[in-house]
Amino acid sequence: MNILFSISHPAHVHFFRHAISILRSNQHKVVVAARDKDITLDLLDNYEIKHEVLTKKKSGIPGVISEFFVYQYLLSKILRANKIDLVLSIGAALNAHVCFIMGIPCYQFCDTEAQWRQNNLTYPFVTKLFTPSCYNGDIGSKHIRYEGYHELAYLHPNRFQPDSAVLEHIKVDSGEKYVIMRFVSWQATHDVGHSGLSLKIKREAVREFSKYAKVFITSEATLPDDLEQYKITIPPERIHDALYFATLFYGESATMASESSVLGTPSIFLDNEGRGYTDEQEKKYGLVFNFSESINDQKKSIEKGVELLNNKPLDEIWRERQKKMISDKIDVTQYLINIVESFVENDDKNFFSY
Image (cartoon, rainbow, N blue to C red; front, side, top):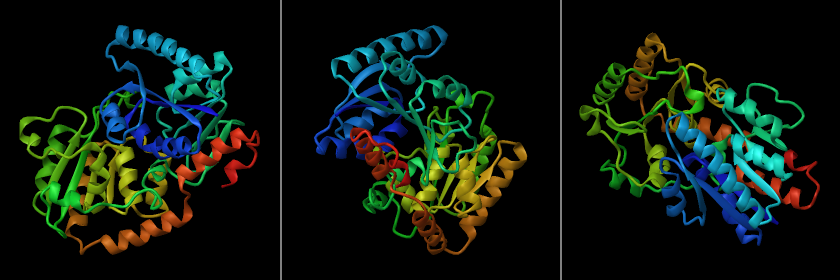
């Protein structure tokens, strides 16, 4: 069968990469169509995933509109040239529209309720929509829930084993406490109306956490000079090793908060709207602490971080919580493979029971 994976964000690389490799080894023709955004192409190259680049992310309304037209045109050409039978992507309205017009089944995956503008442009045109079971909202007859998180496609124990060599790379001794902080640029479609952590709070968090641990920052936006010295410098594909051994994750990225949870690392996430999955990871498993973007909550989040850093080693407690979560959830890569193989057999009634 001929399958196309659409990759338009670094997180999509992680989500699909194992499935791409397995399906190729199973003799399916797999085409990867990529959008040049942030470190997406770097990750594809580092994982040695053969791909075709459709467009590069543009800014400004004229740039965005022109990219949309070019993207749809080039995608339709690739679909025709490769006689694609099935398209898989994450929250991509343009893919759904092109596939709908061309009569090609489009399976989409989504875990972000906050991107409702994009979701409203996507859902009517997809063939099936897959979300974690904890997704807030019912999307109708096309909606299929599964017991997992996106991060379990690449961080499930079946797919990931941490490499302690990363500690030497970031110059941290074994057992030494360190914090990874993540600041986002707030330029995504679901970020409209958000401002995130204030610069004052970022500086305060770094100052307070530095009293108890080394601090590393990963940021989408340029950091001011006084925070630049904390920037983590590792290959992007090694960040999950660093998260696994970290004492604490603190930041504005829902994905990295969830990654930390899946890896058994205490996590503090700040966002006004939250996510179904980070809510579940807090309420059901005690792996995440969710805070809003209010000034009061920002200050409370720092206090919680200091409390966690001051506690006795949390590794054993959090690993037990992680084990409980893993036992309740599925290997999402295997679920992806089941979806595709069920499509091949023209019997897609049973794949969501995995």
